[in-house]
Structures are given as C-alpha cells and as structure tokens.
Length: 406
Image 1 (cartoon, rainbow, N blue to C red):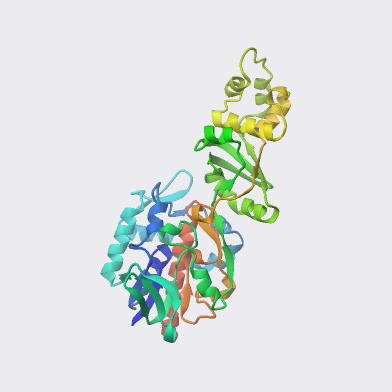
Image 2 (cartoon, rainbow, N blue to C red):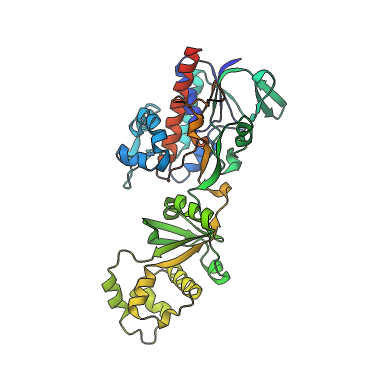
C-alpha cells in the first residue's frame, strides 16, 4: 500500500508528488506513457515558456471566468515562486522581451532531468505504462499494464491526467468517462489555443500552405491582437489566432462560423497608404504594384485576392480609399475548429463546483484533481504551465491536510 498515488507524470502531477514527499508521505507516480513529462518536452521544443512576468492582477485576468477559482492556488504559488523553484533546481530563468519567462537553458529537457533526479532522491517511486482504468474491488485503483491488470490501494489519490490535446503524448481525456460514471460534473472538453478551418481555394492552398502572415492585426468583435498567423492546408493557426481562440471557438460553436477581420498593414497610416495607392501603376501588374506600394508579401497578396474573389470584388476596380479599407479589414470566414488532438491545450474539464478549497472532489473523498483536468483555459505565454504547477502544489498541500485530519 502506498500513502498517495499520483496519476499523471506531467507538471501538475510531478509538482503534487514533490509537495507530498516533502510532507513526509510515500508517493508513487503512475503514468500510461513509458516516461515522465512527454507533453512538457514537446511544449519546450521551441523554448519552454514557464510563466509570465506581468503583474498578478493582469496575469489572473488571462484565465477569464476561471480566474477567481484559480486565484488562491496562484497566489500561494505565484510566478515568482515558480522561478525560485527553477533556480533551486539549478535552472535559472530570464524574462524575454515579451515578458515571458524561460529557463536560461531554454529547453525543457535540462529542467525535467534535474527535477526527476530530485524526486528520485527524495523517494518518489514511478510506475510507467500504467493506464488508469478507474476503481476496482474494495475501492482500489485499477491500472491496465503490459503484464495485465494491477490493483493499488492508496490512502489518497491525486488525478493529474491532463486534457485531451496531443493524445499520443498521454493525455487522451479517457478519464472523463470514469469520473462522469461517478456523478462528477464535467464540462465537455474543447480545443483551446487551436487553429481553425477555412474553405481555401485549391490554388491558394497549394501555393501558400505553411506560409506565415507577419505583422498583422486580427480583429474579432471588440478584441484586437497583433502577431503572426500561418496558413495551413485546412485553415489558419499561429500565435495571434491562439490568442483569440476562445472567442472564435465559442462563435463557431454557436453560429457554425466566425468572421475574422485581418489588417495586413496595421502600422501604416491610412492616409499614407491611400497616397501610395493613388500613384498610377502604369504597366505594372496589380500584384507587383501592391507589393511595392503597400509592401505586401506574396501570401498577404494571395489572401487579399482570395477574399476579394469570395466577396465578388475586383481589386483592380477598387478606388484607392476602398482598397485601403480592404487591405486592413480582410474578411476571413472560419468554418470550424481544428481537431482537439492538434490543439495546444483544452478547455472544459472537472467543474470547480465539484471541488472543495483543497482541490478534493467532493463526491470522492480522498481523491484530488489538478492541472488541465480542471475546467479552465488560458492563452499561451506561460499561463498554462503556471496554473498546472500551482494547482499541483495546491492539490499536494490539500492531500497533506486531509491525511492529517484522517
């Protein structure tokens, strides 16, 4: 019998395990994958964005309606505490120009290796290739393993199985059925920080798939986001799209589509752009003229032409003033979300009303939950990992209090 079983070897689960072992209890971490932190390593391939340096009130607002539910956990383990924790692992951090916080080594692997060494030295046990299948006889945890079913008796359990994005890395959302069968209310899992589908023409798709739209501004309702987007075979994705994904997703779910407006030259003064476009183009093709006058990239020109055809307009027939307006308000019809398996993260999960202040599931005494299993979402920029770490700490501390009371 182990004191506490932690199910899920991602950031939330490993952090809960660390808090627990420091509290003097025996901990075993179970995971369906052959090793720990698979999704963390994937997230850190282009640089591990741990957290963000902005003031805490603005930071908490990034979690939208879930902010008040997460506030106590993040207040107790804020970005400064996460940076100090990294420093103690021999992995100092730095703040990038955007305010994002990264380990100085930049990648995830040095941090994860140092963390696992410390957990091992502290006595945390690991059991890989153990896929959680719920509870068996006498309330024991049931795992499917290559050697057959394995039942585990534990005084308490921390569930940290993640959402349903990138299932090949271990988070497939299969836990939702297990908990729903126990009466736990779960908001449907939906893609977050995701791309969207667009009905591109074959010509546009074949020519511009994989091309970036740089220096653009996306507009949707009252929301404005500067950044980049990338044309994909089935639609559009990228940092600026992810920042609006919650609003766009809800519109698509409610109406079947979302109309996005793209400003291709948001930094260029409207009158200056109109002046440039009023110059006679002579024998130049329209594409060459726009490329030089408006400094539009080939993919931006392609998008402009794609939108004009869709709107039944002829770019060459538009007067300069209308053309200026079109360049900085290109309509793009989004027809759906990209598959949840390709999303960076997921929305939905265990409703916060199902949890007590210690992150214990009220219907399941002794069972705690943390990380992306909970019903919250956040943009990229360090917010996802910060909340996963913080709720892992909160669940671990909650278990210690519960064991003490028990």
